[in-house]
Amino acid sequence: MDLISQFISRYRKEYDFYEQACRIVAQVLDSNLQSTGIRAIVTWRAKNPLRLEAKVRQRAASQSYLSVDDIYDDIVDLAGVRVALYFPAERGEVGRIIRSLYVPVAEAKEFPTASEPTYKKRFSGYWATHYRVRLPDTLLNESQKRYTEARIEIQVASVLMHAWSEVEHDLVYKPLQGKLSEEEYAILDELNGLVLAGEIALERLQRAGEMRVSSDDREYTNHYDVASALLEMSRAKLARLDIHDSAIGRVDLLFQLLRALDLNTPENLAKYVNALHADFEKRPLAEQVIDQVLSEDTSRYAVYENLRTFDVPSLSAISVDFLRSSQSEAIGQFIALWIDYERMLRAVASKKGYKSLGMPSGRFLSTLTEFSPELVEAAERLRHFRNQLVHGIEVPDADYIRTQVADLKRLVESMQHALKPPPKPSRKAAKKVPK
Image (cartoon, rainbow, N blue to C red; front, side, top):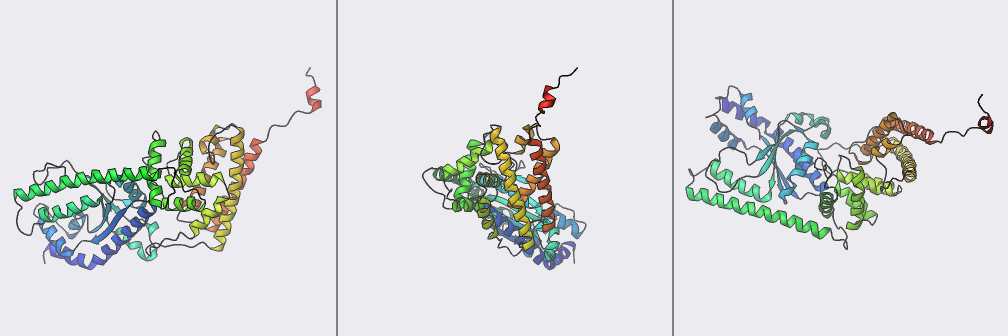
């Protein structure tokens, strides 16, 4: 048995492993794309052993394989996931989501590359981004930890580009009837031009949809419309801020909250996006808008928590820990105290003339001379914990939450003490004239 046959024999035994690994990656990614409001078709596959053998033997002509492991290192797409986007302009947002979910094992590869094309082309060819990643422990339960060893390639392109790429790849790189003629190459190039024109049409279609959903005299009927409007408003109103590194986040939860509070209109959403201008942070946009909604009326925390209670991931691949009663009690204590903390800060902000909707940020706290740098640092740490508790998927255990409750109590007491005006001198002390 030659080296390649040994590799294929081993791969056949591991086929189910790679199939399951890419299935988990695809399901997690599909769930996140849906909740973010990105329209896409997500598929997955483990490499077919027969096609894999043909590919390896073809590559062996230019590669010197010394061991089976050399072949494994060379073939990067044994497990593959394909994201076919309705709107190609969302490739960047998908990339941010991929980087936030998985562990990268190599730099993302952008196409088209600068390499010499296989045949003479008038158009630019394949436009896509390929990511090579591994699953992190946090997405897996104990029985699935072994899948962290699998390397998965995620290909992101438009639905049109994926279709053209499939045709070109099978005809040019896997020719079953010999080398193609010049006429066939020209037709493939022509089709590529039509696909690129189609992508321009898709981008125009996306912009037309964004204009439609931004009309003030309508209500949002689904979270895809909210996602389009949020991105459009962010580009217009936060143009000078560094928003390109912030993913859009759970727009589905934002939509549910706005709808539950009868705020699901462009006019209301614009109000909350405008408020981000002074307090923008590098975290998901949807989270920041939700925080603005909650801070405007703290009774809305109960509505939001109820929505999150029923927001249970449907993926069997993800381990979900339901809140125990002790956790629920600890969370309730923290949120109740946090509401009082917000009220205190908003009262201080009002006295200081701070004109901003919602809770003042750490930038505001750092401007107050009454608060020491240590107090501001403690406040920022607890704010990050609050964000994790309110928006995060993982819920800390009850004991840890209680320690944060105690820390928040100490913070509030320290701030209240710092805000107290200095005592007035007594009359006796005021009348006393120094010698």
